[in-house]
Amino acid sequence: MKFVLVAGARPNFMKIAPIMEAFQVRRQSSPGFEVLLVHTGQHYDHKMSDDFFKDLGIPEPDINLGVGSGTHAQQTARIMVGFEEVCMQHQPDWVIVVGDVNSTMACTITAKKLGIRVAHVEAGLRSRDMSMPEEINRLCTDVLADLLFTTDRIADENLRREGVPQERVVFAGNTMIDTLLRHAERARATQLPEGVEDNEFAVFTLHRPGNVDDVQKLRGICGAVAEVAQRIPIVFPAHPRTLARLKEFGILEQFGNGANVRLISPLSYLPFLGLVMHCRMVLTDSGGIQEETTVLGIPCITLRSNTERPITCEIGTNILVGNDPVRIRDAAFSVLDCTSRGGSIPEKWDGQAATRIVDRLLSEMNTTGGPAAPIGH
Ligand code: UD1
View 1 (cartoon, rainbow, N blue to C red):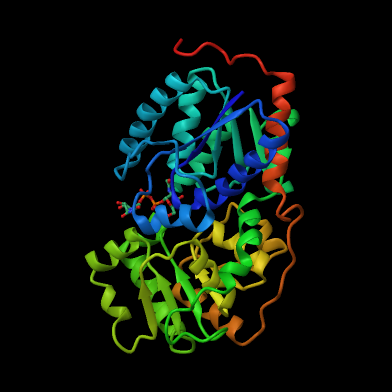
View 2 (cartoon, rainbow, N blue to C red):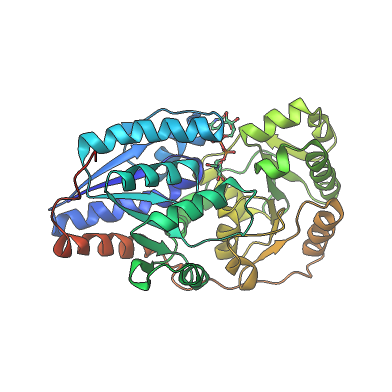
Protein backbone atom coordinates (compact mmCIF):
# COMPACT_ATOMS: atom_id res chain seq x y z
CA MET A 1 0.00 0.00 0.00
CA LYS A 2 1.29 3.45 -0.86
CA PHE A 3 0.69 6.60 1.21
CA VAL A 4 1.53 10.16 0.18
CA LEU A 5 1.89 12.54 3.13
CA VAL A 6 1.56 16.23 2.26
CA ALA A 7 3.06 19.25 4.01
CA GLY A 8 3.08 22.80 2.74
CA ALA A 9 3.30 25.52 5.32
CA ARG A 10 4.92 26.14 8.69
CA PRO A 11 2.08 24.88 10.91
CA ASN A 12 1.99 21.58 8.97
CA PHE A 13 5.53 20.54 9.78
CA MET A 14 5.01 19.81 13.50
CA LYS A 15 1.87 17.85 12.57
CA ILE A 16 3.57 15.56 10.04
CA ALA A 17 6.77 14.90 12.04
CA PRO A 18 5.25 12.35 14.45
CA ILE A 19 3.26 10.72 11.62
CA MET A 20 6.46 10.10 9.66
CA GLU A 21 8.05 8.73 12.80
CA ALA A 22 5.12 6.42 13.60
CA PHE A 23 5.24 5.05 10.04
CA GLN A 24 8.97 4.35 10.48
CA VAL A 25 8.34 2.51 13.75
CA ARG A 26 5.56 0.39 12.26
CA ARG A 27 7.63 -0.47 9.19
CA GLN A 28 9.65 -2.89 11.34
CA SER A 29 6.63 -5.04 12.21
CA SER A 30 4.52 -4.47 9.11
CA PRO A 31 6.71 -3.75 6.08
CA GLY A 32 4.08 -3.93 3.31
CA PHE A 33 3.69 -0.21 2.74
CA GLU A 34 5.49 2.80 1.33
CA VAL A 35 5.31 6.46 2.34
CA LEU A 36 6.22 9.39 0.08
CA LEU A 37 6.64 12.82 1.64
CA VAL A 38 5.54 15.70 -0.60
CA HIS A 39 6.36 19.32 0.29
CA THR A 40 4.29 21.70 -1.79
CA GLY A 41 6.72 24.57 -1.20
CA GLN A 42 3.93 26.92 0.00
CA HIS A 43 6.41 28.09 2.64
CA TYR A 44 9.96 28.20 1.34
CA ASP A 45 12.12 30.54 3.47
CA HIS A 46 14.73 28.67 5.51
CA LYS A 47 13.25 30.06 8.69
CA MET A 48 9.70 29.10 7.71
CA SER A 49 10.50 25.63 6.37
CA ASP A 50 13.98 24.00 6.25
CA ASP A 51 14.83 24.88 9.85
CA PHE A 52 11.65 23.08 10.99
CA PHE A 53 12.64 19.93 9.11
CA LYS A 54 16.04 20.03 10.84
CA ASP A 55 14.69 20.76 14.33
CA LEU A 56 12.08 18.03 14.09
CA GLY A 57 14.26 15.43 12.35
CA ILE A 58 11.83 15.12 9.42
CA PRO A 59 13.47 13.36 6.45
CA GLU A 60 14.04 15.38 3.27
CA PRO A 61 10.83 15.45 1.23
CA ASP A 62 10.79 12.94 -1.62
CA ILE A 63 9.22 15.59 -3.84
CA ASN A 64 9.11 19.38 -3.52
CA LEU A 65 6.62 21.14 -5.78
CA GLY A 66 8.23 24.54 -5.10
CA VAL A 67 4.99 26.47 -5.65
CA GLY A 68 5.95 29.56 -3.59
CA SER A 69 3.72 32.56 -2.89
CA GLY A 70 0.89 34.10 -4.89
CA THR A 71 -2.78 34.92 -4.61
CA HIS A 72 -4.96 32.17 -3.18
CA ALA A 73 -6.06 31.07 -6.63
CA GLN A 74 -2.52 31.12 -8.05
CA GLN A 75 -1.09 29.20 -5.13
CA THR A 76 -3.93 26.66 -5.00
CA ALA A 77 -3.82 26.13 -8.76
CA ARG A 78 -0.04 25.63 -8.83
CA ILE A 79 -0.29 23.07 -6.01
CA MET A 80 -3.08 21.22 -7.84
CA VAL A 81 -1.18 21.04 -11.13
CA GLY A 82 2.02 19.83 -9.45
CA PHE A 83 0.26 17.39 -7.15
CA GLU A 84 -1.80 15.88 -9.96
CA GLU A 85 1.44 14.89 -11.69
CA VAL A 86 2.72 13.33 -8.46
CA CYS A 87 -0.48 11.30 -8.08
CA MET A 88 -0.49 10.17 -11.70
CA GLN A 89 3.13 9.09 -11.50
CA HIS A 90 3.09 7.40 -8.08
CA GLN A 91 -0.53 6.19 -7.89
CA PRO A 92 -0.91 6.27 -4.11
CA ASP A 93 -3.73 4.43 -2.34
CA TRP A 94 -4.06 7.16 0.27
CA VAL A 95 -3.18 10.85 0.44
CA ILE A 96 -2.77 12.18 3.98
CA VAL A 97 -3.25 15.92 4.51
CA VAL A 98 -2.96 17.89 7.76
CA GLY A 99 -4.34 21.18 9.07
CA ASP A 100 -6.11 23.86 7.09
CA VAL A 101 -3.69 25.60 4.75
CA ASN A 102 -4.07 26.03 0.99
CA SER A 103 -1.95 22.90 0.41
CA THR A 104 -4.39 20.84 2.50
CA MET A 105 -7.39 21.75 0.38
CA ALA A 106 -5.60 21.76 -2.98
CA CYS A 107 -4.17 18.25 -2.54
CA THR A 108 -7.48 16.91 -1.24
CA ILE A 109 -9.43 18.09 -4.29
CA THR A 110 -6.73 16.82 -6.64
CA ALA A 111 -6.56 13.37 -5.05
CA LYS A 112 -10.32 12.87 -4.86
CA LYS A 113 -10.81 13.75 -8.51
CA LEU A 114 -8.32 10.99 -9.33
CA GLY A 115 -10.24 8.50 -7.20
CA ILE A 116 -7.60 8.41 -4.44
CA ARG A 117 -8.69 8.15 -0.84
CA VAL A 118 -7.88 11.06 1.48
CA ALA A 119 -7.24 11.11 5.21
CA HIS A 120 -7.47 14.49 6.95
CA VAL A 121 -5.56 14.96 10.19
CA GLU A 122 -7.05 17.75 12.37
CA ALA A 123 -10.52 17.46 10.84
CA GLY A 124 -13.70 19.06 12.14
CA LEU A 125 -12.30 22.34 13.47
CA ARG A 126 -14.71 25.21 12.75
CA SER A 127 -14.42 28.94 13.43
CA ARG A 128 -17.73 29.65 11.59
CA ASP A 129 -15.88 32.63 10.11
CA MET A 130 -15.99 32.44 6.34
CA SER A 131 -13.70 35.45 5.98
CA MET A 132 -10.83 33.16 7.04
CA PRO A 133 -9.25 31.30 4.11
CA GLU A 134 -8.52 28.46 6.54
CA GLU A 135 -12.24 27.95 7.26
CA ILE A 136 -12.93 27.48 3.54
CA ASN A 137 -10.00 25.06 3.35
CA ARG A 138 -11.35 23.07 6.34
CA LEU A 139 -14.88 22.80 4.94
CA CYS A 140 -13.76 21.71 1.47
CA THR A 141 -11.30 19.19 2.87
CA ASP A 142 -13.71 17.62 5.34
CA VAL A 143 -16.56 17.27 2.87
CA LEU A 144 -14.28 15.22 0.61
CA ALA A 145 -12.11 13.24 3.03
CA ASP A 146 -12.66 9.49 3.50
CA LEU A 147 -11.11 9.32 6.97
CA LEU A 148 -11.30 12.27 9.34
CA PHE A 149 -8.94 12.28 12.33
CA THR A 150 -10.06 14.73 15.02
CA THR A 151 -8.27 16.39 17.92
CA ASP A 152 -11.24 16.73 20.29
CA ARG A 153 -14.89 15.82 20.85
CA ILE A 154 -16.13 19.24 19.74
CA ALA A 155 -14.71 18.53 16.28
CA ASP A 156 -16.45 15.12 16.26
CA GLU A 157 -19.72 16.86 17.03
CA ASN A 158 -19.17 19.48 14.27
CA LEU A 159 -18.71 16.68 11.74
CA ARG A 160 -21.70 14.76 13.01
CA ARG A 161 -23.90 17.85 12.59
CA GLU A 162 -22.62 18.29 9.04
CA GLY A 163 -23.73 14.75 8.23
CA VAL A 164 -20.34 13.02 8.03
CA PRO A 165 -20.93 9.29 8.65
CA GLN A 166 -19.60 8.32 12.06
CA GLU A 167 -17.49 5.43 10.76
CA ARG A 168 -15.32 7.91 8.87
CA VAL A 169 -14.49 9.95 11.99
CA VAL A 170 -11.67 8.87 14.32
CA PHE A 171 -10.96 10.80 17.52
CA ALA A 172 -7.19 10.40 17.53
CA GLY A 173 -5.79 13.32 19.55
CA ASN A 174 -3.40 16.07 18.55
CA THR A 175 -0.23 15.33 16.56
CA MET A 176 1.11 18.84 17.16
CA ILE A 177 1.06 18.04 20.87
CA ASP A 178 2.89 14.74 20.14
CA THR A 179 5.67 16.91 18.74
CA LEU A 180 5.59 19.35 21.63
CA LEU A 181 5.87 16.58 24.24
CA ARG A 182 8.64 14.83 22.30
CA HIS A 183 10.79 17.96 22.03
CA ALA A 184 9.90 19.82 25.24
CA GLU A 185 13.19 19.21 27.03
CA ARG A 186 15.34 20.22 24.05
CA ALA A 187 13.18 23.31 23.57
CA ARG A 188 13.45 24.30 27.23
CA ALA A 189 17.23 24.21 26.94
CA THR A 190 17.45 26.60 23.96
CA GLN A 191 18.95 30.04 24.57
CA LEU A 192 16.59 32.93 25.17
CA PRO A 193 17.29 36.08 23.13
CA GLU A 194 19.93 38.22 24.80
CA GLY A 195 18.71 40.37 27.67
CA VAL A 196 15.47 38.40 28.11
CA GLU A 197 14.89 36.92 31.58
CA ASP A 198 12.94 33.75 32.40
CA ASN A 199 9.24 34.49 33.09
CA GLU A 200 9.78 38.23 32.72
CA PHE A 201 8.68 38.78 29.14
CA ALA A 202 5.70 38.21 26.85
CA VAL A 203 5.66 36.74 23.34
CA PHE A 204 3.71 38.41 20.52
CA THR A 205 2.94 36.88 17.10
CA LEU A 206 0.60 38.13 14.40
CA HIS A 207 0.01 37.06 10.81
CA ARG A 208 -3.72 36.69 9.98
CA PRO A 209 -4.66 38.71 6.90
CA GLY A 210 -7.70 39.99 8.88
CA ASN A 211 -5.34 41.61 11.41
CA VAL A 212 -2.31 42.64 9.39
CA ASP A 213 -3.66 43.71 5.99
CA ASP A 214 -5.84 46.53 7.39
CA VAL A 215 -3.84 49.59 8.41
CA GLN A 216 -6.25 50.74 11.17
CA LYS A 217 -6.46 47.31 12.79
CA LEU A 218 -2.73 46.74 12.63
CA ARG A 219 -2.02 50.19 14.06
CA GLY A 220 -4.52 49.59 16.91
CA ILE A 221 -3.08 46.18 17.79
CA CYS A 222 0.49 47.46 17.72
CA GLY A 223 -0.52 50.43 19.89
CA ALA A 224 -1.99 48.07 22.49
CA VAL A 225 1.10 45.87 22.38
CA ALA A 226 3.34 48.93 22.86
CA GLU A 227 1.26 49.84 25.95
CA VAL A 228 1.59 46.32 27.38
CA ALA A 229 5.32 46.56 26.70
CA GLN A 230 5.54 49.42 29.15
CA ARG A 231 4.84 46.85 31.88
CA ILE A 232 6.68 43.80 30.48
CA PRO A 233 9.24 43.40 27.67
CA ILE A 234 7.79 41.80 24.55
CA VAL A 235 9.56 39.51 22.07
CA PHE A 236 7.99 39.65 18.61
CA PRO A 237 9.14 37.09 16.00
CA ALA A 238 7.60 38.70 12.92
CA HIS A 239 6.02 36.67 10.11
CA PRO A 240 7.18 37.87 6.64
CA ARG A 241 3.67 39.09 5.76
CA THR A 242 3.45 41.12 8.97
CA LEU A 243 6.89 42.66 8.59
CA ALA A 244 6.02 43.71 5.05
CA ARG A 245 2.78 45.38 6.21
CA LEU A 246 4.47 47.12 9.16
CA LYS A 247 6.93 48.66 6.72
CA GLU A 248 4.33 49.47 4.07
CA PHE A 249 2.00 51.22 6.57
CA GLY A 250 4.83 53.05 8.36
CA ILE A 251 3.99 51.36 11.68
CA LEU A 252 7.38 49.82 12.30
CA GLU A 253 8.60 52.92 14.16
CA GLN A 254 5.96 52.23 16.84
CA PHE A 255 8.39 49.52 17.93
CA GLY A 256 11.45 51.75 17.67
CA ASN A 257 13.93 52.69 20.38
CA GLY A 258 12.52 52.63 23.89
CA ALA A 259 9.35 50.71 22.92
CA ASN A 260 10.48 47.63 24.88
CA VAL A 261 9.38 45.42 21.96
CA ARG A 262 12.10 43.18 20.51
CA LEU A 263 11.25 42.52 16.87
CA ILE A 264 13.14 39.45 15.63
CA SER A 265 13.05 37.13 12.59
CA PRO A 266 10.71 34.12 12.65
CA LEU A 267 12.15 31.40 14.91
CA SER A 268 12.37 27.73 14.07
CA TYR A 269 10.51 25.17 16.15
CA LEU A 270 12.77 24.56 19.15
CA PRO A 271 13.74 28.17 19.92
CA PHE A 272 10.14 29.31 19.51
CA LEU A 273 8.76 26.61 21.78
CA GLY A 274 11.54 27.39 24.27
CA LEU A 275 10.58 31.07 24.18
CA VAL A 276 6.93 30.23 24.90
CA MET A 277 7.86 27.83 27.71
CA HIS A 278 9.80 30.55 29.49
CA CYS A 279 7.43 33.47 28.95
CA ARG A 280 4.82 35.03 31.23
CA MET A 281 2.09 35.14 28.56
CA VAL A 282 1.51 35.04 24.81
CA LEU A 283 -0.41 37.48 22.63
CA THR A 284 -1.18 35.89 19.26
CA ASP A 285 -3.60 35.34 16.40
CA SER A 286 -2.17 31.90 15.58
CA GLY A 287 -4.27 28.74 15.69
CA GLY A 288 -1.64 26.28 16.87
CA ILE A 289 -0.18 28.47 19.61
CA GLN A 290 -3.58 28.44 21.36
CA GLU A 291 -3.16 24.67 21.73
CA GLU A 292 0.52 24.72 22.67
CA THR A 293 -0.02 27.28 25.45
CA THR A 294 -2.95 25.25 26.79
CA VAL A 295 -0.71 22.20 27.18
CA LEU A 296 2.08 24.31 28.70
CA GLY A 297 -0.31 26.12 31.09
CA ILE A 298 0.83 29.53 29.76
CA PRO A 299 -1.85 32.27 29.50
CA CYS A 300 -2.71 32.97 25.86
CA ILE A 301 -4.47 36.15 24.76
CA THR A 302 -5.84 35.50 21.29
CA LEU A 303 -6.31 38.54 19.06
CA ARG A 304 -9.29 37.10 17.22
CA SER A 305 -13.02 37.24 17.89
CA ASN A 306 -13.53 33.53 17.20
CA THR A 307 -11.56 30.33 17.35
CA GLU A 308 -11.79 26.96 15.64
CA ARG A 309 -10.23 25.56 18.83
CA PRO A 310 -12.85 26.41 21.51
CA ILE A 311 -11.61 23.66 23.81
CA THR A 312 -8.57 25.84 24.53
CA CYS A 313 -10.93 28.48 25.98
CA GLU A 314 -13.28 26.01 27.69
CA ILE A 315 -10.66 24.05 29.60
CA GLY A 316 -7.33 25.59 28.58
CA THR A 317 -5.57 28.91 29.14
CA ASN A 318 -6.89 30.77 26.11
CA ILE A 319 -8.80 34.07 26.23
CA LEU A 320 -10.35 35.53 23.05
CA VAL A 321 -10.18 39.33 22.90
CA GLY A 322 -10.52 40.23 19.20
CA ASN A 323 -8.51 43.15 17.88
CA ASP A 324 -9.90 45.96 20.03
CA PRO A 325 -6.86 47.72 21.58
CA VAL A 326 -8.54 48.34 24.96
CA ARG A 327 -9.59 44.70 25.36
CA ILE A 328 -6.11 43.53 24.39
CA ARG A 329 -4.46 45.80 26.92
CA ASP A 330 -6.95 44.99 29.72
CA ALA A 331 -6.62 41.23 29.19
CA ALA A 332 -2.83 41.46 29.24
CA PHE A 333 -2.87 43.61 32.38
CA SER A 334 -5.19 41.19 34.15
CA VAL A 335 -2.79 38.32 33.38
CA LEU A 336 0.08 40.42 34.72
CA ASP A 337 -1.99 41.16 37.83
CA CYS A 338 -2.42 37.40 38.22
CA THR A 339 -6.19 37.33 38.05
CA SER A 340 -6.26 34.88 35.14
CA ARG A 341 -6.99 31.18 35.51
CA GLY A 342 -4.91 28.08 34.90
CA GLY A 343 -6.27 25.26 32.78
CA SER A 344 -6.27 21.55 32.10
CA ILE A 345 -5.17 19.42 29.15
CA PRO A 346 -7.72 18.04 26.65
CA GLU A 347 -8.35 14.30 26.34
CA LYS A 348 -5.88 12.36 24.15
CA TRP A 349 -3.40 15.25 23.89
CA ASP A 350 -0.98 12.69 25.28
CA GLY A 351 1.79 12.21 22.72
CA GLN A 352 0.20 9.15 21.08
CA ALA A 353 -2.02 10.70 18.41
CA ALA A 354 0.24 9.85 15.45
CA THR A 355 0.49 6.22 16.52
CA ARG A 356 -3.31 5.97 16.63
CA ILE A 357 -3.55 7.58 13.20
CA VAL A 358 -0.93 5.36 11.57
CA ASP A 359 -2.38 2.21 13.12
CA ARG A 360 -5.81 3.12 11.80
CA LEU A 361 -4.41 3.79 8.32
CA LEU A 362 -2.41 0.57 8.28
CA SER A 363 -5.52 -1.37 9.30
CA GLU A 364 -6.85 -0.34 5.87
CA MET A 365 -4.18 -2.61 4.35
CA ASN A 366 -6.06 -5.65 5.60
CA THR A 367 -9.53 -4.44 4.67
CA THR A 368 -9.01 -2.46 1.45
CA GLY A 369 -5.53 -3.45 0.36
CA GLY A 370 -6.36 -3.67 -3.34
CA PRO A 371 -5.48 -1.02 -5.88
CA ALA A 372 -7.16 2.38 -5.67
CA ALA A 373 -9.80 3.39 -8.19
CA PRO A 374 -8.37 3.96 -11.69
CA ILE A 375 -6.48 7.19 -12.07
CA GLY A 376 -6.98 9.80 -14.76
CA HIS A 377 -10.69 9.36 -15.50
C1 UD1 B 1 -0.30 30.36 5.85
C2 UD1 B 1 -1.62 29.64 6.11
C3 UD1 B 1 -2.06 29.92 7.55
C4 UD1 B 1 -0.97 29.60 8.53
C5 UD1 B 1 0.28 30.38 8.15
C6 UD1 B 1 1.44 30.15 9.09
C7 UD1 B 1 -3.15 29.47 4.17
C8 UD1 B 1 -4.37 30.03 3.56
N1 UD1 B 1 -2.68 30.15 5.23
O1 UD1 B 1 -0.55 31.75 5.89
O2 UD1 B 1 -3.19 29.12 7.83
O3 UD1 B 1 -1.39 29.96 9.83
O4 UD1 B 1 0.66 29.98 6.84
O5 UD1 B 1 2.53 30.91 8.71
O6 UD1 B 1 -2.63 28.48 3.70
N2 UD1 B 1 6.13 34.33 2.73
C9 UD1 B 1 7.50 34.44 2.76
N3 UD1 B 1 8.22 33.31 2.99
C10 UD1 B 1 7.64 32.10 3.16
C11 UD1 B 1 6.24 32.00 3.12
C12 UD1 B 1 5.50 33.13 2.90
O7 UD1 B 1 8.06 35.50 2.61
O8 UD1 B 1 8.36 31.09 3.37
C13 UD1 B 1 5.33 35.54 2.48
C14 UD1 B 1 4.60 35.40 1.16
O9 UD1 B 1 5.32 35.91 0.12
C15 UD1 B 1 3.33 36.17 1.41
C16 UD1 B 1 3.10 36.02 2.89
O10 UD1 B 1 4.33 35.60 3.47
O11 UD1 B 1 3.52 37.52 1.13
C17 UD1 B 1 1.98 35.04 3.17
O12 UD1 B 1 2.35 33.69 2.85
P1 UD1 B 1 1.21 32.58 2.53
O13 UD1 B 1 1.80 31.24 2.48
O14 UD1 B 1 0.39 33.04 1.40
O15 UD1 B 1 0.24 32.62 3.75
P2 UD1 B 1 0.49 32.80 5.31
O16 UD1 B 1 0.01 34.15 5.69
O17 UD1 B 1 1.89 32.41 5.71
